Image 1: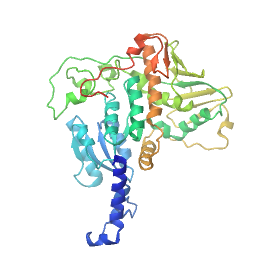
Image 2: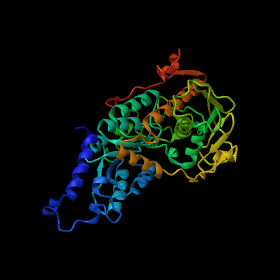
Image 3: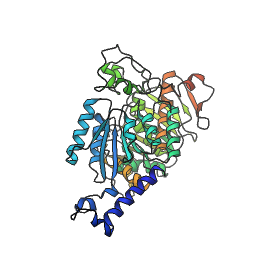
Image 4: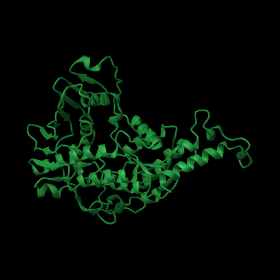
Length: 432
C-alpha cells in the first residue's frame, strides 16, 4: 500500500472508530470534545502530523507558523545540534502541555516514523535538496526552505523526484502567497501590461562567492554537534564553529554549490521566482550575460528580458520586483504596497497590503495541498525553473562572460567550463 493510501486509511479508521455506535463499548464513557472535533478543536483524523529537520533561526519562525494552524500536530524534531533539539522540544511540549516531542540527531530516524505525514526542512542550504528527496522517497510531503538546490543538476533531480513520488513540495518562497505580489504577477501573466518586455529582480548583491575553508578547531562531542552529519553531502573540511552558520558568507560559510550562491541565489530564489511567476512559470532564460553597469541581463526564448539589478527603484521595501509591458508596468516589494503605471490597472479591485513577508499563508497553502493532493504555489517545478535561472546567472558571473542554456538538453551550448559547474560531487553516502 502506498504511503498516501496508508495515511488516508489511517484517517478513515480513526474517524470511523470515533463515530461507530459500538465504539462506546471500548472507549471511556466521556469522550473529550477535542477528539470529536468540537469546540473549535480539530479531530485527530483531520490533523496533519509534522516533524522538523534542522530547526534553527529561520526554522523556528516557520515552526511558529505551523503551530498557529489548528490542524497541525508537531511530534518530532531532528537537528545536528543538541541545543536546538532541546529548544524546539521545549517549544512543542509547551504548545501541547506534554513531554511528547521526540528528538533525533539523524533525520532518517525521523523519516522512518509511519505516523508523520510531512516535514518542515529548514537546515542550511547544503542539506535542502538531499533532505527533501530523501523525505519524498520515505513517503513524506515537505515544506522546504530556500534556496532549495545547490546547482542546476540538483534542481532537475528534485523536480523529477517530486513528480515521480507524487509528494507535495512547497518551497519557502512565501511571497507567492501574498496578495500584492500575486496581483502584480497576475497583471504581467495575463497581458494586462501588454506584451511583456522586461521583468526585474533585485538580488542581494551580485557576487559568486566561494565556500570557505577555515582552520581546524577542536571538534565537539557528536551529541553536542554532529559535524559529519552537518557536512552531509558537502566536501569534507575540518570543524570550525564559524562554519556552522550556513549563510555566514563573510566568515566562509554556505556550502552552496561549487561556489557559494551569494546574494543572487539567496534573494534570487525569492525575486527571480516572482519574475518566473510573472512570465507564466515558463522554462528559464536561455541566455545570460556578464554584468554591466550594475545589471545582469538574461533573455527568455520569446525575447522577454530578466534583469538582475543591484539598485532599487521606488522604495517599496526589500525584495522588490518590477514588470514592464508595452502598455504598462507594476512594482511591488515587501512593504506590501503596489505602484502601478495607471490606476486603471486595478480595475476597481482592492489589493490587501500585507507587509513583512509573513509565511503563515504559505504554510496554510501547503497544509491544504497535503489534504487535497494538489500543487501548492511554490511547487517543485516552479522552484526548479527559478533556481536554474539563479544558478545559470551565477555561472555567468563566475566566468565573467555570456553563457547560453539549452532547456531541452539542460546543458550550456558548446561551453565545457560552464557545463562543469552544473553539478558537483557529493560525499558518500549522500548520492541522489
